[in-house]
Length: 308
Length: 273
Ligand SMILES: Cc1ncc(C[n+]2csc(CCOP(=O)(O)OP(=O)(O)O)c2C)c(N)n1
Image: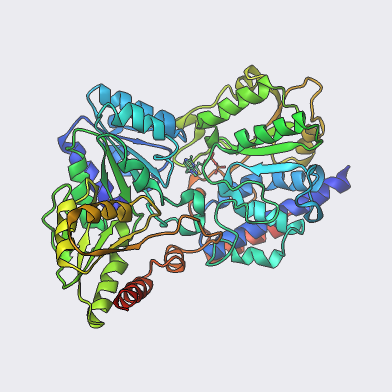
């Protein structure tokens, strides 16, 4: 995803000479091309995220459009108040980009796990939050981010993600993308977890519960309309996110409580307490119920319990 | 005392070899970082810190914080060497189910603070030192920082605080290897004049070669300074020190050695006196 991001950004920077990239001493082997081609609009702000976010706000106030780039929680939590007061409140066109949303940085440990970011960012004023699932969605949201006149948060995976959209989907900000039409079950997924969600959907179909599958490259504003419509059609809405509390499940519960539909919610997300263990991305997902197999099992068990 | 020095030198060499094997096996990053701090860790754990597995939770134990948490492999290596957990466990570094996460984890015996986000350690160290002062406890607090880490403003807030409150049992060590993540310190955010900065914050400053054990030891032995100030050692180091093809190379912040590269690195270290 990070290459899809930086390639799109280079194309956008060719056309828009107000577009800047500011990094927090990260981007080795990733941002080099942008730095080489647009040296006047590139700056490494150092390991100093609070200052980086404030500088981005200043550049934006001077009429520039700024992408801020770092990894994990560093461009989010470390400078939360600069983002809130200086960027979001002033509705400045600054896009905060993080590489490594969710458990992507596996063995690096809890400091590098971005598992509370959606909760924190979506509550800020004027903020649009993107969490693309694959390189195709990454390109689409990066282009969108460059034309939004306000703050944006862009949560990326790392690299090597599979392309899940075989052709370019009909993307619009705030709209869910339907990858599969099913019967009385609808799966809503945001971010890089979509790949196992699609495998889970295959398995559920074989088991006689063919689900609809939606990807939410825009996490906020949430596509409440589609969720509400599915809640009137379905028995269950399943939310899947590589994130802890306060994310997609919580927002979806609000929609369901108001939609007048009969669907119940099956939230699949990370527990609040982190594991005290190291492990690869796949291992950490599996240990915490986010593998395709664990999703299928959780959904089946829940449906069976309801049927009793 | 050449004998004493020999001991910590051998320990530093073992820290380097463990770190190389761990990072190779896990295909992990940050070997340059670990090689940079091996000598500092060896002297700290061999000659200075009053810590031991038997006194893991003792109120008066010295406190060490690896604020540059990405050097965790080297820290785990020295802790295993000092008996905090079995050396064999080092093989599990960064692997599925292991407690030895890629950045320093407080779930590991002997690790006081989980780190990995830069710029946290000095403030926590200042809190520990303030507690020692107010509660009349004899322990010293040592915080190991990297140079890129000093970009973070939080360090300078902690420096102001510690200087103001005369936390004379607080020691900061700056691993000044002149390279950060995406460029040299001079290119990204120049820290110079670094000693003047710390002095202006009312710290007692000593500049040392961070690979010369006698210099590290004698600087540590002057703590607490008689001037009631917190102390900082500006340790001039080489990122990748001890493995010639890694020295001064930014790439070894990221790369993990292949089988062949590991072999030649270990051979070079084994050949050392
Ligand atoms: C708050 C924060 N921002 C960014 C990072 C990502 N990061 C890891 S190491 C590093 C810099 C490495 O250089 P330096 O701090 O000088 O350490 P060295 O490896 O050279 O000892 C960065 C930016 C981080 N760990 N924490």
